[in-house]
Image (cartoon, rainbow, N blue to C red; front, side, top):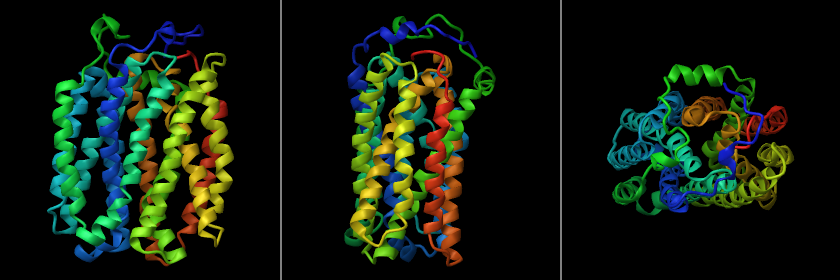
Length: 413
């Protein structure tokens, strides 16, 4: 990979025209993508009643999704690097909407598992393309904040997914999937009219030959810094998916909450904090990066290291209010990391490798996160307290934060 010790010339370029419109359009897509994932976790009891399955089977729904999503993310990223980023996003949203609608009509566990597989295929194409498109439009001075605003849509989706328990209790578990499937189709129509790639004259790759995927894998695979970032993202993925998949169940059993209240408590507080974290962390990193090359790295490093004790304390308190505070702290720290992951990647990877590189990071995050999702179900089947999974997550958060101290950016990006 080419090393650039001098500041990246693109870092001083202002956002291109339509840059903030692009962020706004993709905010809604990110919201829908993650709403679907979290909605399923909050209606566990209703789904298990309608479609008989064990807790390990329920965990497998998320593991299969994450493994497919992770395995195909590098391919989805390469498609975004090789072809039109906006077209990849549009196709992904169309497939997402169709699969979400289909989920409302499944009647067997095998059918439900199949929709999770197809959802993994769909979503593997979205995040790498979306973040790369945002990085194309936002050059340097607004990159972390723009990424953070987009990620806030993802957190809004996770928080809205907390409605799944309420919708399942009051309207049946399939109502949420049918409703949001239609919303996705409408949004796809809006994007077809509005979403565009960066004009060729402004694109960092203008005039360059399209790279072969193996060129990207060699460029990134030969970078020790990239592997440090991948391990960081993987450990954070373990903690994130452990919380996403099993925190509603943990809270319900530990504090004797209803399905509706447990789903709300596990998602709303943490995601509102994450929403704040991506905005604060993005603006903070943009400002710090003006004077410090490692400013974008230091923000998530500080946030995650300080948050790790609170992740541990989530499982060691009998007071629900204090557990909520711990969730808020973790959510804020995770937001600081999410708003800076693609900007950090831009500091170590050439523009033509960025979407594929983020896809590779997703591969590690989702495969390790899939282990967490399945492990929670395995622990439940063997009558082992879920607190052990969450304690392991706390260790993962601490290590992931400390690893960032080893990251050495090669460009301002």
